[in-house]
Length: 127
Image (tube, rainbow, N blue to C red; front, top):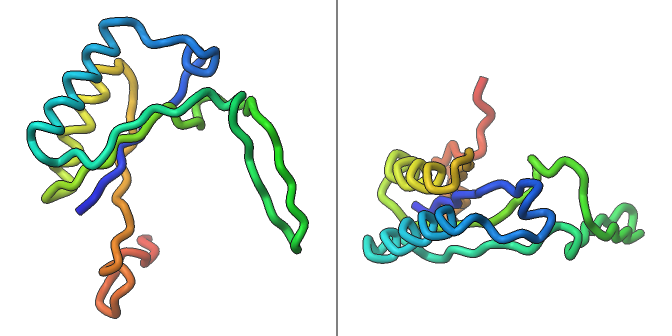
């Protein structure tokens, strides 16, 4: 199973500031350990939203909104994609990353082709 671990942007990353050295080193250790464990597919940070754009198409009309975007807490600062045996394993890795960052991260399973099969409940609404 593939999981995406998402770290959020913050006011410093949105200002284009690099993280403190101890944070960068901690994240680097987690990424190195992911690689050594053979579960890392990729790990990438993203530039601040002021260098990005949002694209919307409605009834054939395209609207492009240049960044920066409000609500920093909703913006992505980087992603790591891992291939692991279980959700619990993904959460263990995410916890290590959250500790290194000193902030919350989000874990989301990546949709696989098998999720579209007739016996799949991946897209059912849970009540």
